Image (cartoon, rainbow, N blue to C red; front, top):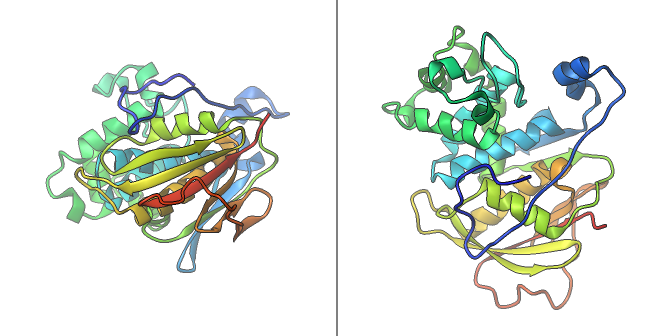
Length: 299
C-alpha cells in the first residue's frame, strides 16, 4: 500500500509498503455490502468485564481511527467520538456508496465540501477530516458523544450516535492504552514481513504522542521501543506500549501479525490472550522505555 497521507512518519523510520486481500464465494455486490458480516473473523474488546465484538475488518478501521486521533495529540474522548460516528455512518466499513453521494468510513459527501471521492475513500484522509471538524466544535470534549458527532456530521438522525457510545468507549480505551484487551479469533496469516508491519505503524501514527524506536527487525519479528513523547497529548512509555500492543492485535487480520506482547503478556494468533516467553538476549536490554514485540507471518 503506498502512503496516501502526509509524509511525516515515526522518528528515525524510513519504511516500505503493505498488505492484503480477501476472497469469498458469493456474488461481488452481495459480498461488498454484507459479506464481512457473515464470513469475517471476529475481534472482541474487554474492559473490566464489559465487552464488544466487531468483525476483523471493522476492528482494523477502529484501530486506524484511534491511531489518527493519537497522532494528532487528541485525548481518548476524541477516539470514542470518532469510532461511534463511524459505527453509525458506515458500520466501520470503508464503503464506496451511501445516501446520495456519501462515501467512506464517515459517509462524507463530496458535494458538501468534504473532498473528492478518491480522497474520502482514503481512510486516513477521512479520519483527519472528521477530527478537523471535531476540534472546531466549541467545548467538544464536554459534550455528549451524540452532540459532538452531530456538530461535525450534520446528520438527519442526530441522536443515533448515542446508540454506539458504549462500545466505542471500550475500543477507544483499549486502543489508546487506557485499559482493556483486544482478542481476535483469526485464521492463518498471509506471508508478510516485519518491515511491512512497520510501514503500517508509520501510516497510522506520527510524531508527538510518543517516540518509537526500531530496536530489531528480522524476517518474522519487530521489536519496537517506546518512550514518552513531548508534544500535545504526549503519553507515557507504559501507556504507549499498551496502546501499541492492542493496536497490533486489532490490525492483525490485515498486517499478518501472529504475536503482540509486552513484558511477556500478549496475544498469539490461534491461541488468543496468553503469556509469551521473552527470549534471552533481547535487543531491548538497557533500553530506557517500554518494549513491544511483534511477530508477523514470514515467507
